Image (cartoon, rainbow, N blue to C red; front, side, top):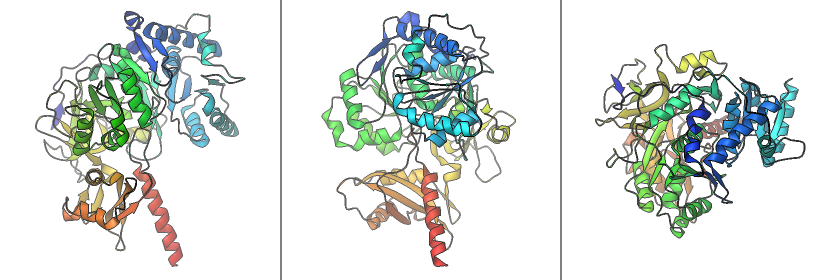
Length: 537
């Protein structure tokens, strides 16, 4: 069966993203749009809108033209949205780059996207220059590296803002022109450029209105990276479109995070699971007054219901909100509304407007399933990406002929229409014919008071059977043993789901958005297996 959103459809929004977000800036005038959570510097809506026009003019003077690709390589700053919307206003496509990128990774994205312009900050300039050198070795030259905070020999944000020419007149085609080109691995494989049009992003913002819309003047804390589509959409596009105030932090540090909430009287938190975990368990939280927080929205990866409840209790909230989406969905399909009194515990919410969902069987037949049945999630709506940049075969494998995007996620819909995410299709562990979801075991592990973090993957045993292995981070001072861990899990799950081996680690590898990088753990295990096999010869 096809599940359809219970909310009325919304019309397609055919506006450039900068107009969709800042079209109402004049009405908000002197209201704070951005606040630097470290320095306290404030940028009003009037100043932000004027800055976007000036940056667009400055970029046009520098040679940026409609259809050019500009790479934005920067941590969160109050200058980031000026550069981002200024670039789209100038007609460019922005490819957002992880602030953790190495020179090789940056050069790879610059080369793949065809970026001619690179905007960065002075601490990242050595990486940017090395990436430019690597690109030059491949016969490609960047037109220019701009440094937002200034560096000798490079144009700065101040230089762009000082442009005196009028902003360029650019004819943007919202349905065809790519506004943002973030990179995602999709369901599997190497990162690919995700083509998100002005229309798909602007329409997705209107779709989200059906369940979530920040209030005018509401203070939202932005610590998730703007380079990630979750941070870009939930912490810049949506709040700025609604007249909220975005309090910007460059990175997550729990003490600074809590202090900023207290000092700025932040009302809304939009986070990923690692932050929810820290808020639920870390003792430093007790030192701060977080009573201003009215709701917390967590997305990017599944959040265990018990962990969510513990975090809510710590913050004095009735419950936490969750959401679901992916880069290829511009990025939202489901959200729990802050106005809901009794959402289904542990769910990622109901479908936003103009969205359809199918749950298909995992046995290869692809039959549609009904409420309560687990399968792969397929989603259709105006928020679906245009495709993967330069990869038509990958696009065809992701989006079928009927427009359904195959998410690679496993989940089910309850009888109230709430979606639950179980795990990734590719990450399910096949133990003797049974399917074991790593996320389920991770949730059990995180319930142990001496476990600070955990990840689970499948590894082959001596007989070649894939078995669950847990990577566990102990709380400081804990003497927890592997035997105690396996016994703890065995007492709470069916026999076939038991953790068969445990390795204690200092940290679980995660992406900037908080997703566990199980592929790194699998690669580590594969290297060990290969080394052991070589030694045995």
